[in-house]
Image 1 (cartoon, rainbow, N blue to C red):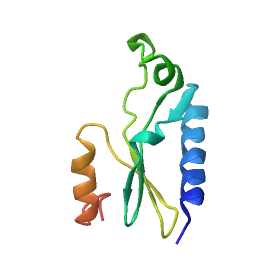
Image 2: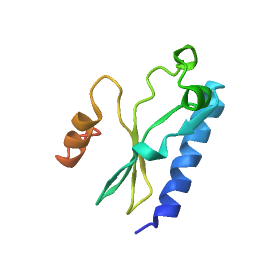
Image 3: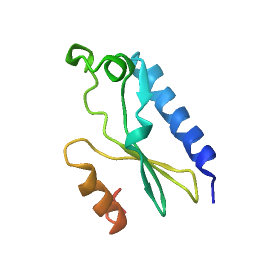
Length: 99
């Protein structure tokens, strides 16, 4: 099982990859992290928006939360068309991602 520090490092690396692809400056909003027995669910957003809360910087579209499994370190990107509760329930039921 991975430590919390290792899980966070995986999450930061994942967001860095998204940042490089999107050319946006992103940040993990760690205060919204959901800790489950199987891993941590992280939320990320535009860094300028996070720091200012000014809606004109809220430019990130489709940036749904993601899970880092604590056994494998695998990252599972959740969608953004449903609530995070929906994706959590689907994951816990073994239906997400498609099996």
